[in-house]
Length: 224
Image 1 (cartoon, rainbow, N blue to C red):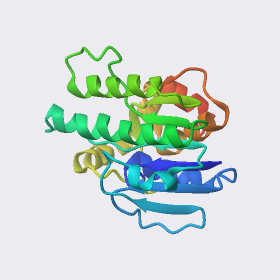
Image 2 (image 1 turned 120 degrees about the vertical axis):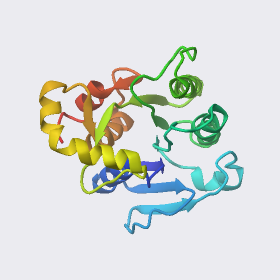
Image 3 (image 1 turned 45 degrees about the vertical axis):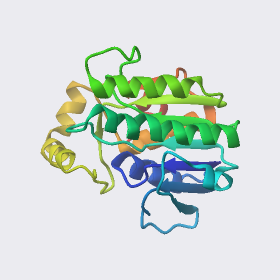
């Protein structure tokens, strides 16, 4: 399987990249970003691209892939809706429209979040924009597309969030993770499970298109 990964420097993307590189069925990974990951691996190739609203100049390099794992995203904290929409919706759809044109047999998996608003009418700005993005992606003629809606994601294997507030939050939460898992198992997943679930969905599909934490963990095999 040949995979394109967007957002490989983020917390989720780092976990997904790790699982892709470990998986013997993945023969090639193209990491697309505005900066390089700095990683070296025989399977990994990097494409640094600055304009995420236009991929026409690199279409050829985005051709011949079986799956795309779109993990690019930003926190909405302190952002105006126009700016958040540009990163969340405009960037994602620009990439997806290019990919579906060049790879009609591709499976596209998008990382959204618990609480995403599919009606696009709610009061929460980020949830409306994420819902709009999901809805637009599911209308594109990919072979298959799945929207991952994780809740609390535990970083594994030394992976850290790029967002300072999240890093602090995860550090505070770390000692409580076993208790949270026991009391609220449906609220938690981790970077390993997200990556493994994406690979499973790309290979074999999933029972539904909108996947919440329990669905992600089930798809990953329930292992950490």
